[in-house]
Image (cartoon, rainbow over the protein chains, first blue to last red):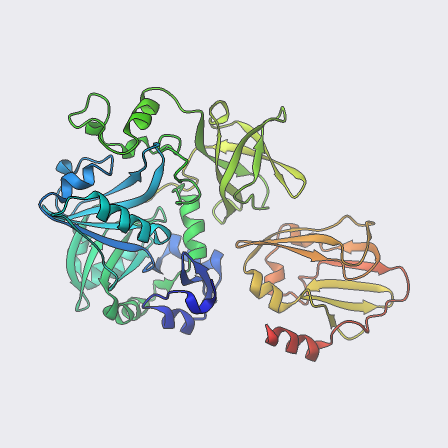
Length: 371
Length: 124
């Protein structure tokens, strides 16, 4: 794909103005970093407040009297238990018990849900949802909306000063409100492990809104590079790496995403794609599991690196790896054979012909600080 | 010390007799982004021109640096092991990578001077 064919977000000119390095990501030209660099942006977000343009992600509205029951046929979720203005993390599973996409679902009313899906999956998700829901249910991609994330411990001070009602939001709660005169739909959530917000607003309002937030001394624009290192430290899955059509949620350690009522013996057990395989794995076992890896050295151990046991047999593969500013060393996530999926297990990663020892550790690498 | 010369691989070289100091350019460090790890050859290692002997890893990517000349590694910048970010901060100074003793009197005439290198990076 050439640069001409890449899509842009409503904040594209702002990224260029701020000296962003732009890269192709999921069909969009996106900022990977700004002038300060990924490590500084990462640390700024952990200490203060980082503003991320995530408008490339898909905002999908699912509306109608049967919207809840339609979604329950596609997601291992219990929407009867989901109050209005409450958000949940969920998965579009496939018939083999793998994952089509991971997403956020927020109930805006009894019959109106807002999904946030991955940029790379959004066209496929939209098509799939439209095909699968009943005729009365309307599925629409909100292409005229921007999505911004404000992440980090001082984000509440910034947004709370503009819209005091947001101080009352708990983690994963949502509110429609005016912020600096701009109508927004806000959830207290994010992808960094920090307290923060995701803000959906009209694309045409997004530039003025971003500039208003950047006027606060706590707030700095953060690129996709730091977004990735932050989510890696937080042990959060990235679709295409830790999640795919070939990886089950149970292998990924996302058992908690399968609602109790959708499990064996539950009131609404099964009846989602791949239910048989996934429920069997919950009751029984899986052969590989997602783990965290820590190196004593700085050399990043990148996705795709093979992992071997001390005996020399291949026991897994790295799915995401990079440098952790918090650890001052390389960290990674990987899938490894069950017997090695316990903290303390020693494995060997071969990086450019050199054997580097890594240790299996608990996830996350950096404790979550949600409110 | 001689005039600094540049390669099309975004390295710089500076000669003091037959001892050549090698580093990466400001353009290269800026393209790589935050550097978090550097792997340098052993002192005493025999290098041949074009051989990839140095690995520089940034938060974004791994880059390999080839030896611009034939020679023997006389010194490596040990300080980079604990502070690889020095390459970002001072690529042409404290962020040097290795010093190579060349087999014969070095001929750097085939490399670019600063003006030519500048034009080369502008072409993209």
